[in-house]
Length: 501
Image 1 (tube, rainbow, N blue to C red):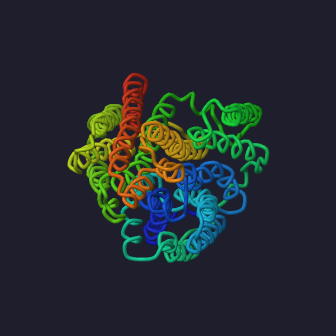
Image 2 (image 1 turned 90 degrees about the vertical axis):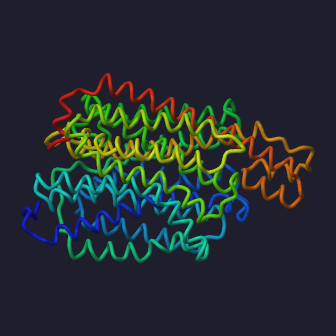
Image 3 (image 1 turned 135 degrees about the vertical axis):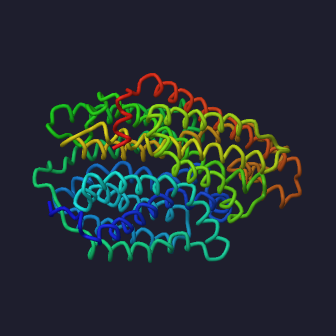
């Protein structure tokens, strides 16, 4: 490892580059969400394809992150970080030229592979840039920006789609990635870990196929039937593959997925809180733009702006969290944040067809406050609970589980929404073709209703979607409440010291 960069003024410029890279990765998780209703109409994408468009990036991101981190350890973190940025650039260029749902999914898959290299290696570069007393600030900046990027995505995407062409949501990455490559080349020192284990191809294959089978089952369950042999087989295959991954790691001194880290209670429950937040937030980012556009009738920019209360709440809470955590301790702050998120979700679940945007803005603001309050101390406590050689493994496991939580959020909550919407929609005797189109999404149903002058269909679509959204928010609120109670009961109080360092 290079000499400490504590006295090197370039370290803060390097941090800006790393923060910018992580911001791009984060808002690319949700940047297409405001475009989903129009994509359903323009590309003929059904609900399953829409979920894959949102999820292909996240699934590949999560599945390849651990082996990608090992590549950096062995062959040079700066070198592989630049390679990751290059792959992300290639995926963005492919997306710029996409004109079918399948090409969009392919582009997002390539971008996910690049992102899997970028995020863990950006975090791994921090020790070579900052002394221990500065490292917490640097990690906090990256963690906060990564969380804020999720609600920023719909706003950026909505603005681009209103003023530019379709591919602009991908093309915006091009100049940002080129700047990131230049910053890495000129500002980051090269580091590697000679003792790093070799890439375990079998574990990598088990990770990718296991996670992929689970997300496939969750995505396709509503359309194919949860009891169908294909879906049941996907869930069983996922369980077997992930169990084999854990079993294989037990016999290795440095396994790729070290689940023994979960024996540390502070790490386990802080990771559970951070993962639950990622799950709920990613699911909301998939559901809410469809409500704002399909039910309230906002355009893409309006839907992005409609997410601002969530972002504002997160910004306000994240700025105040440090001082509050130092005074009350991480357990109290994480629990309070999750309780606020739960209350917001339950409030949102009461939204009715006659309600305007006001109630949505209120519960989004409360949800943002809860997320912003909980995520930073949860991350800090999880990483601060591990020391020495286990810190790197813990960071990789935490980041992977959080990303996978986001993928499950889109797949699970999106499937709940799709199933409830389809079951409640009343096409009112429409021809089979029109009824099938209306069943794909609330946006498609509104387009059919406008074309045919079918007011009954429009009202039924709104009612069916709100029923599905209520179910999604009730499940989210219940999960947040359960994890809040578990954190309050199980997170050890000594974790308070970790958040104050």
